[in-house]
Image (cartoon, rainbow, N blue to C red; front, side, top):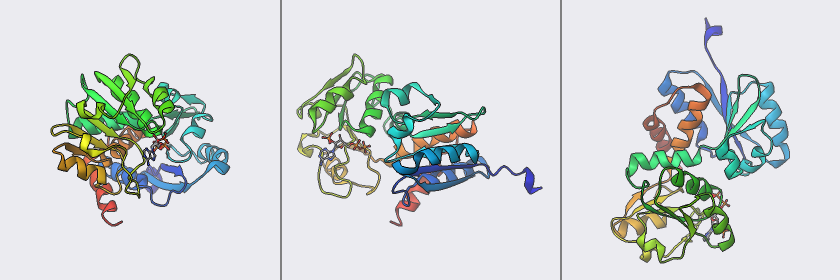
Length: 276
Ligand code: ATR
């Protein structure tokens, strides 16, 4: 009887990986679908990524989430690369196709747009979106909000040259901005790593205005200093866990062909974070 049970394996690769929420989100997703698939974290860095990709094929691992520091390296090594992963030069979702080839895709931007659709509908289409940051996470958001119909996508970054490159991911609607643009935005996305384990802030919160939507991509701590300041300014604040959950929803869909329950996944993620 047990031979009929489908125990296929997925996982997450990166380093450090011990605290990754991905296996917890994957397991909650499988439970919501009634699947007995398993998920495991694998500590893989630049030195053993090639061996890990061979292992994925050999062991018939169905899918892997990819995180720091591997997203770009994996994009250079897969057999098939989706358009979004090619534009971003970053893979966060690896799928073993039926013919054994490895496909690299990026679900971060779609995850962000879906999370906003739940938490703050109507905050992207036709809106003025300011993105703080121009790194991997910011680039995914810039491309995705442009594709989702943002009226204008304004990129503000500490290093101006990367802001200009990132703004190209929003053809026709993207440009490099200045601090004053923050005050006129409909949606402000905090996509820098400032505030992750430090008191640094990507912008002066006094530039925020009541009624704006402010989305933070950091999910731990659950409330960053920037989120607290935005709440105090009267903004509608959206935390980063939703994006993580929804990029995972897209990954699970690619691996299983079924859409898991984001609410169950978010609950599992929140429960785990509350213990840290
Ligand atoms: P991620 O993959 O999380 O996006 P990343 O690609 O390393 O990480 O990008 C980090 C982003 O946070 C960059 O936009 C970085 O700005 P620079 O391009 O100038 O390096 C931004 N960042 C990091 N620390 C910051 C700080 N203390 N203040 C402002 N921006 C910061």
